[in-house]
Length: 464
Image 1 (cartoon, rainbow, N blue to C red):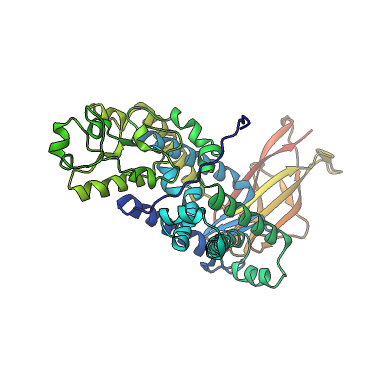
Image 2 (image 1 turned 45 degrees about the vertical axis):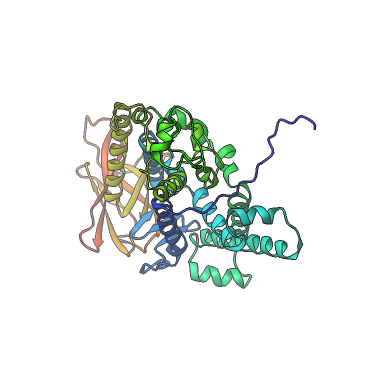
C-alpha cells in the first residue's frame, strides 16, 4: 500500500443518547432554529420602509433591527460587537472550555439536525453500520431519502438566509416564479451546497481540520478550566477497568479486586460525535458537548452507582485541589468586555436622527465683495435618518454680525432616509485687527416635529 500524507476518514456512527445535556442541546437547537427560520417573517410596522423586523437593505444602505436603524457610518457598532463576541468567547472558554462549540456553533447545530434525520430514516448506530455495508434497492432508497431530506434542510437554510436581505413574502413569491434577482438564486444555491457538504458529509472534519478554534483553544485553557473529563482514579482503580462479569458486578467486589467503576461498555465512545474516547484524556477534537457524560450517567444509573465518572470538572478538581473560577485572566477579559459593551450601548442610545456635515468650498477660500465684506461658501450635506419626515432650518452662530445666505431656501423638508446638499454663503464685515480665520457654528434646527435635538457642526471662516 503506497504511503500517503493524508489520513483516510474513519466513518463515525454516533449512537443516540438521552440525558440532561442532550436535552439542553435540543433546547438550544430549538431556540436557534426558531429564531433563524421565523425571524424574517416577523412583521414590524414601519411607515416608510418594509414591515420586516430584521432587514438588511443593501440597495438602501441601511439595516433594520426592530426599532434600530443602522447606517454605513455606524460601522463602528459592528466592530464593537465583534470585539465583544470575541472577548466573551475567550472568557467563557477560559472558564468552561469549548461550550460554544458543543452547544451554540452553527456547525454543531446543523450537524445535529442532519444526524437526527439520518437516525430517523436509517435507524440507530448498529442499523446504520449494517446499512453502510449493504447494497440493493432498500439500502439505496434509505440513503437516497436521507440525502434528499438533507438537501431540503440545506435549501431551507440557504433560502431563509436570503430572506434577511429583502422583504420575505415578496422575495419568496419572486423566487419561485423566477422573478428574483440573480443574487438571490446564487446565494441560496451556494448556501444549500455548503450546508449539505459541511453538515451532511464533512461533519466532525470541519471541527477537527477546518476550524482554527480547536487548534488554539489550549492557549485559553488552564488547570481551572471546566472540561469534560474522565475520573481515571475512580474509573481505573489500581488494577484498571473490567466488564461486570460474574464476581465483579458490585462496586464492593470490584474495589476488593482493585478495579475501578468503568465497566468498559464503550457507550461514551459510541455517542461521541467526533469519535474520540474521553478516557484517553483531553483531546483537541473534543467539542465539550457532554454527550459522553449523559451516556456514562445512564450506565451508572442502571447500576445504581454514583454519577460523575465522566463529568464537567477541572484538572485541579481531579487532583483534589480547589478550582478558582475568577482569576486575573478572567478579570482581564471581563474589564474590556464590560467597557466596550457600555460604550456600544451608549453609542446606540445617543444615536442622532439627523446627520449633518459642512465642507468649505476651497476654490476660492474667500471672496472680498464690493462693499468690503468677506464671503465664504460652504457645502452643507443633510441626511434624515429618522423614520418620519422632518422640516429643518439653518442658523449661524459664533460669528457676530455674519449673514447666512442659502438662496431662496428658508426651510428644508426631508423624507425618511432622504439626503440633500445645500450651498450656503456667509458674509461678514471684517473688523480691524481681526485674525486670519475664526470659528463658526452651523446649527441644523428641527422645526417639525418638535422635541428633536439641534445638530451643531463647527467650521472655519477665512478672512484673508
